[in-house]
Image (cartoon, rainbow, N blue to C red; front, side, top):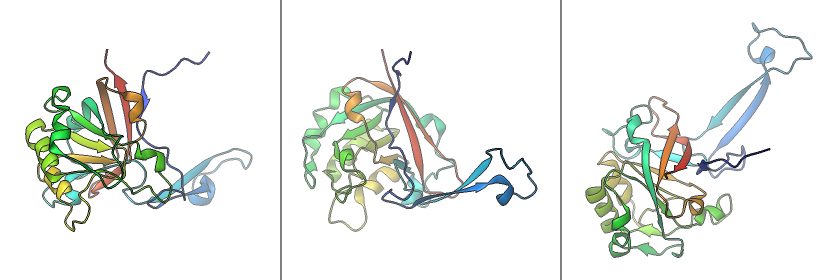
Length: 223
């Protein structure tokens, strides 16, 4: 009998050749790829080579992405990738609409200082479609309030981002990155979390020199 898991998956499954950013997987028989390794021809024994951009799939962007002194993938503190989290529901917002400071502050009572914060838009339903990059956005005023007052460990969204449209310097990115706050794009299943608080585990690849990484995010609802 299969029992339902108490954990909620917040990352998209990654499909080679179908991601908005490059992801390719090539399969080799171990003997062909590593000649010194020998095995019987009738034994299944493979190794895969993965070629991808660091922004493939659900991914976390570290401050180093837009701020040279900032933490990169291998240096972002582990204790900032695990912790209590809350989902703020803005799924009524349409692509191109803003989330204002006043609208964000309506959730003030639900956000604790140092939380991991997720912005729900339900735009994950358009992932891998021509509209995958359509999204509402945080005003810079709202983003700066979140950063300065709530001091989150990480801020994420189920949309492709929450940057101010029409800008050429990504002000929301900079507002977070200059405070060494990482951001996550293209999450999923935030509706399954609802308003319950949860403990979240964000597991990127700690690759030296990388500014971002595909990420596995697991949520555990708190009692």
